[in-house]
Length: 166
Image 1 (spheres, helix red, strand yellow):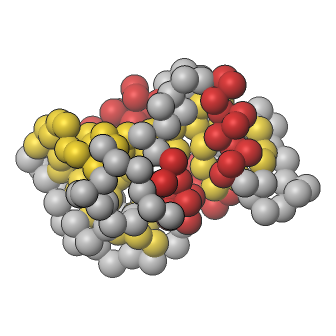
Image 2 (cartoon, rainbow, N blue to C red):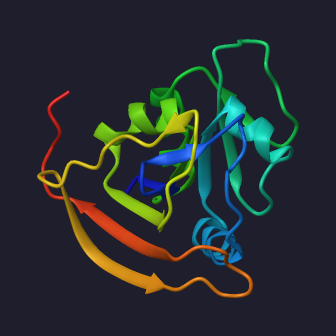
Image 3 (cartoon, rainbow, N blue to C red):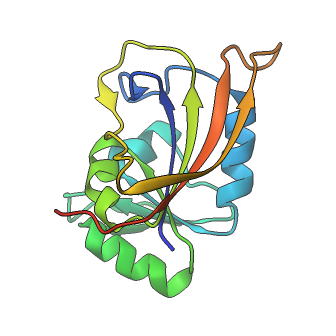
């Protein structure tokens, strides 16, 4: 099962200037707990925004640069290659982004694990539209802003119900 995991705003905003726009500790904690001990697939820019490999995970970085190497990470040149390697190491790899990787991965994903941040942000990268004829919402937890989390947010899971026409 391939899972896309993302935090997105009401306007599908993901980030700006290669950074997250908001800080939600509850989302970061959930992300860590969900992806721990799994293969995580990300684009080079996403990896560089993190600054280091995510601990206790198999980090797979997609880049067009054939000479790009990172210690303690696997580098590949396509999403297809990343998925092939991940599937040999993990039954449930996670796609971490960024925007272009999410767009490429949508036809291959079985599950979407989304944190919706209930606010609109100015952004320069956006998550692809979730086609409700292909994806069925199976769970939703709604949370109000608090002293640690500045915005209202929801954790939402979708499961693919149909194959996407590419």
